[in-house]
Image (cartoon, rainbow, N blue to C red; front, side, top):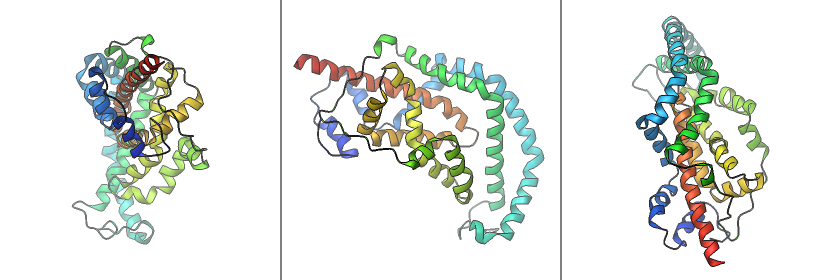
Length: 299
């Protein structure tokens, strides 16, 4: 596993140059070739495994009910007002937004532009209301679901072993640019989402997609924070590990951030993505064991 090549080709070569993996690693190897699949795995596991769903729902149930009730009342009393405000705003500034009262940048959608923009705005507001009522409990549920997922796989703390470098010539991580720190900070994400991306928010899903692209790598790193901690990896080891799999981490992080950015239901993915990240970490660790055993035999 060497070579200066970068990107998806380098990742493919990892599997093509590897000798036949044992039977218990075949399925994991296939899943590792398409990391966004772990997002789907996370949703499936969360809703089909009672040991995961029941504790998470129990922790978030009361906050969800209270938040949904307040959100429904807020929507009932403000949707018409906000729709009227948007109608006046669009009719007076189509050159600024690129919108008219009937089209979105020249395209006529099958729904009212005013209704779409109002629904998107109210949906974001209801999401903030739910976050307010869930607050601390959803963070606890997200943290616990990682441990519960690992436990459901029958693995204990001894499963996570010290880091093993898989490449003979590991790549050198590039120096972080100022944009990386900007997009990974709370203030930077606020500026990007609420100011720079504001014109794109009038397109169906475009604002969410662009925001997810900026947040992708940081989201993936955050989702695997517990994995790196379990292996006691240093900052340098984490940087190299992610650089070796940068396209995997970008794809997984983009998909996770995209789903978490959806109004209201994104809160569900906020939990299920932890399940998917734990499942991905489980397969990555099995591969680490395989490499360590190969090195031990060859030595």
